[in-house]
Image 1 (spheres, rainbow, N blue to C red):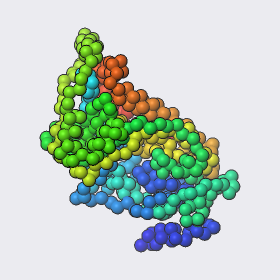
Image 2: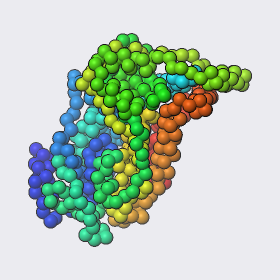
Image 3: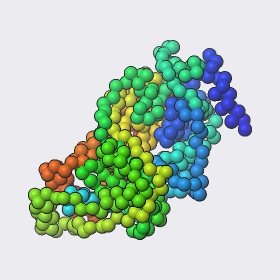
Image 4: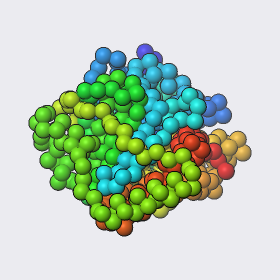
Length: 457
């Protein structure tokens, strides 16, 4: 009760006084912003630091229950992200509601006879499918238990300034003002803080939208613990397992096609999904000639190679009120830091969802920034010290940029029906599949485990 009263005082009075001073202000309480507030709030060395979380939405996250319908948006968490959430004390709360682990992934090309399968190295899972809302709610509950963290909903930032070298001024829509030594922007790919700070970014729209929905399955393969992805000429379609008999759809396609899909009846939508998964697409004879030659070459080298067709599950139904679409884009901020200001998550970088890396990169930002701030305070420096914040920027850009470039290149190579790109991607896929027993397993699992374990250099 005292905590709730404290939050009420924060929202109604403390931000309107002239004494609203904080060491850290985090704008945005989504998955990445919530993870950072939780992470900083639990660090003993930061226990005397005042931390404020500002959320533009007035709606506070509510913990889901097992009986509730699955929400539309889900994420694929890698092993490193799960480790972070476990260290923050929220993974057990999330798993107690619902989490779907998958231990197999099959990716295939609609324009060529090429595919690749990924399996864990031992008994570990490749990834975990979890609802965005569930992660956000669990982190919100944990954050409210941190004694030095205050959370305020329904507060939008409209202005930034500086009152001195050490303090940033944050002006809210209601006219109140806050001062902080470090402002953290975790307010998404359309970051208002990034715009107010005048921080340039490089980006482009993909002229694609992602259609998402919850699907019912007519048959179950491997206990529905396989993630499926097929590359179509217009973009990839993926099925991510949710339960024994349902999966989450993520279908990247043209904006026009996405608009058409979201207007279909249930029967027509199911027909369209099954067609995308099973229909035969016309192939170039030149593509078939080269892929056949690559297969013979691999066989001659006596690599273990299997390109046998594996069928995804048949879709029998769709929960219509879960059907939605959102535009896809690439964006990367030229800088992650200014004096007393840091960008994390989608505010700093946005990638295509084909590899499921978005939130995992954001959680990596959380890990690295926490380590940097801990060492900064331990050295007796100001928590918003530009020279120390640069270590965060350097570490994360070195990590994020190569991954983002690879995802963008993959999207472009696989979103075309031109002969040469199809031959190149099919040949590469066949070569990767041929060394699966040694390399693919290691690449798949070991890379996933290290994606968000980037510590301060």
